[in-house]
Length: 186
Image 1 (cartoon, rainbow, N blue to C red):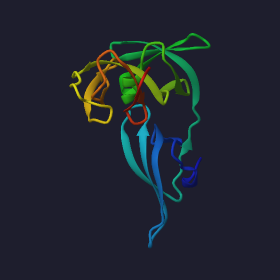
Image 2 (cartoon, helix red, strand yellow; image 1 turned 135 degrees about the vertical axis):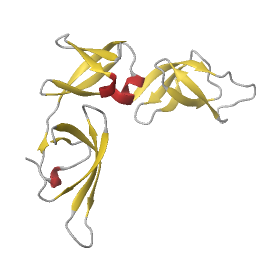
Image 3 (cartoon, rainbow, N blue to C red; image 1 turned 60 degrees about the vertical axis):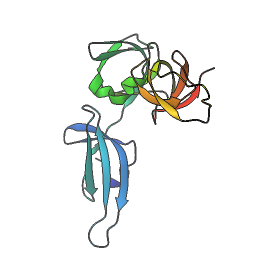
Image 4 (cartoon, one colour; image 1 turned 90 degrees about the vertical axis):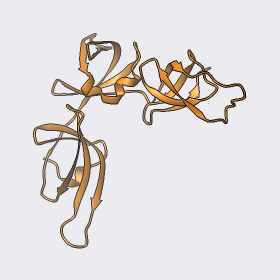
């Protein structure tokens, strides 16, 4: 059993029969009353986010996760299929488990899969991915690199703002942590 002093960002814990990852935490010491930890937690099975305050005396189990390197194979009927690179075992993962990470997945991409007690809880994707622009408005003559931005749809369906000079078919680098355009791939 763990206590509130064990809470940090990224801690995986079992609380009320669900497995959560701490996404934000703050130790609070009010003028009156007992100190507590204010958290935001993401349910790794459903993807829902909740807020919870833990006070001294609350206990929960910290869950250890196994992470395996996998390769994304394909998407079929709302499930994403991954293959373990050591055993060649395949894992189908639902879109609800992946959340926004699914918008960065390209076939043959390598990533990590988080497993606890044989149950897949999510994936870890690279910080930067290369994606092609499939749809965007054409640039207007006179637009420069210092001009504004325009919306673009990428090959995975992700929508981002890109500089005015970019055209359809060009490959760009996206930061998966922020979802923002970084640079044009040369």
